[in-house]
View 1 (tube, protein in one colour):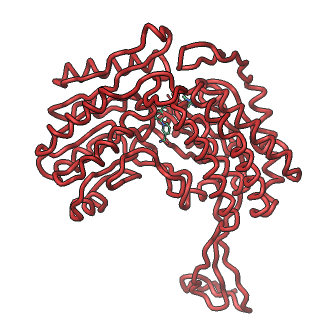
View 2 (tube, rainbow, N blue to C red):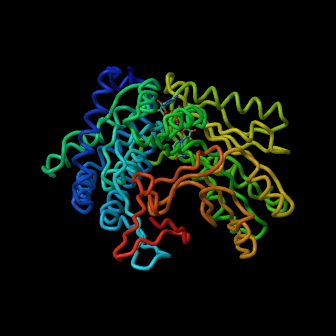
Length: 478
Ligand code: NAD
């Protein structure tokens, strides 16, 4: 397997993929590790994650640089991704003392009901190229405090990031001393390696991040063996801008969310739904900002827009732009740039495409910096457009009108897992549950009570009386 850098298309490394026998052995080792790890008290498991957070802090610069090299993110986004790993470790350490169950009122005298949460087993983590480290950390920090073992199948485009994280994990493990070996393992390979995790009944939870196409295959396969899935799939995220919005804020928020990571975030803004009265002004300002963006080597200071991940990604962008043109779209930008300097890499000017209606092309996720502009007259029309896509990940409204923002957040407002006011669609904090509905897959990771996906729940009824009353008044006199 050759690993290429999107910065210049150069080869970074050659790796040998793991065989299916190696993968099967790894799952067996993870299963053994889990059987020991689940008996370690959760706060003591938290100590391992605390050490992992320390090791990540110590290597923040190097890890961030590797993300830039292998995934093409600009320096500050690479460092931001490492910070996200550190943050989730901190969160998980606190969580290790808070894996709360409930006590529940029993209808029977002398009885007590409660629920307890137990470690689930082996967690298979399949990740996408665009967050080559953070998604592993979201899953692993929680899974470890929840008492599970993890096997990670990273994207075939970013295996070096995975090997680096594993090396950092091994350092934390060496300092921890007490835990079983093989709590976290990395498997190098493509889709076939992912499929082995998906089909193996020893893998209790498959947490898969990637395209909706991938989720459509993974979901039913895991369901067939009654395994659990956590799916984090594509998004088609919109920003609504209303007549009294702060346009300075809106321009900045939209530009970062639409162009950041070269439009290759699951939460990237792909659609702008703007009120007709401010649309000319806003689109003109966005075009000016787009015209001045510094595009180039993401490791160079001042660069705001790095490369697309590969040629296929560039071609998918051009196909979408051609289709949008055929559907009446007016395209500005979108062309390849810096071809002379980087003949084997794909840098593009981000595109703004003004559409008369929300066509099939607009309703698809194209993983590139394309911002479709749609205009509306009243908010109910904007909300209908916002929700009329198959995906349901992230959304935002820019407005200073309380009625508008509350309507957007209400039951009849945005149908996305993430709904923001006066900030863009991307750049979530780890404290909240992350994920979305519809074709985004329904999974929730990271903060809030996302930890529950990594544990199994048992409901316990305890009788401390000398009688044996049956629930619902049922009589069974012997
Ligand atoms: P991808 O679907 O091509 O690959 C993702 C991972 O799935 C890779 O590791 C790949 O090897 C594996 N895979 C592919 N087919 C598989 C199968 N049939 N069985 C098992 N594993 C399989 O996605 P990508 O191009 O790497 O990433 C971009 C996509 O990921 C976008 O759609 C983006 O929106 C999505 N994404 C979603 C989130 C989220 O949290 N919702 C986060 C990041 C990326």
